Image 1: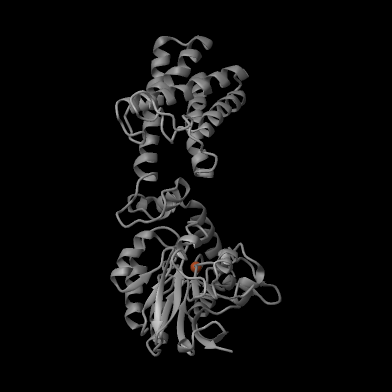
Image 2: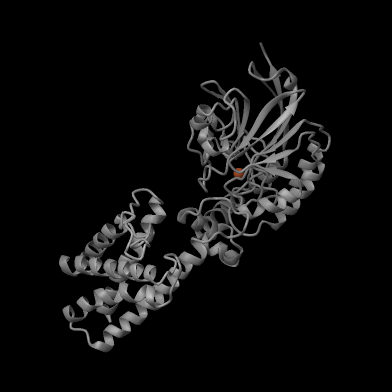
Length: 464
Ligand SMILES: [Fe+2]
């Protein structure tokens, strides 16, 4: 029984290693094993998905895991090599029969990868023929289920308008948080957040008697007015008003949507920018947040439109319905706004923090260097690239200004990999002016202490 389990662990580890490397390193160091060589039938020997990285690391994994399981080094090494050779031979054969290398062929895909090393492991451990067949069947069934999940979920474009690059790490994160197929299991798939925020932190605030006060503070959202001066701003955009609302988390608190609606309906601005994070949780249903968003959007009076970016709590599936509701979503895209013959650029990147989707090169692809540019990103992390691509104003949120600030110390947690001065408020980097909003809503625990939520009304000023 023990030897059966050990052999299965060894084979699973070898099988999983190339996938894990793809998860961690994506396309880095993924040189194709066949060096793009063509076979006599004119087709590639193996294709791009069989890499030098996968082969070497599969063998190393076999050696190391074999040793950890108590096998001699050579057993793990040869098992790794044979399993990888079986995998590559399978790929070679599929190519000859014109089968797509990514297409799952049940049993065949897993057969050689398990059979080749078992030809060695059977005699070494004196396993009976029935024992070897049993091991092979278990290996085939389990790895087939794994390959199904990999190919049908993690490597598949989830819907037509999905425009992110298909990357294992990002698709895995989306599967944990977004895909409706996994929705009922989200609290389990995000167990660390469920325990930390819902069981631990909420209990702490309640025991301290601070929960209700904190929720009241969170509903006390400010309208903040700011003037930003630029000498590059076209004359016709002098006094141009931009309403900036970030981290709305509209389903975090009863009454928040109504509070924000009461603020925005009294305003008439030139442009509205939404900085991402429309739902409270970073997983689960977003239908309530979507409905609240539609109500809020209906109350925003912005002459040149409502622009938005995605935050780390958002799902790509939220983009199409919000676009239908009239929001202009910028996912590594830019738009031009014209006024009396002059132009400014409004550009927005995909979430840089969790989904790692920001692509400044793509965003500014068709933008001229001398244009005045407003860049919107959910978080401040991409400030260096933003300045390099000539952004004049960088608008972001994400930090919630800590949400809880201790007097004399400041924010306790910011979830931000940017300098401290970029955590909240106005900041400067090289020629670029930045503003990090404390956000309108809350996440994690729906409380605020020491920092108010805000809706920001920015007036652009031309200076000479
Ligand atoms: Fe947020």
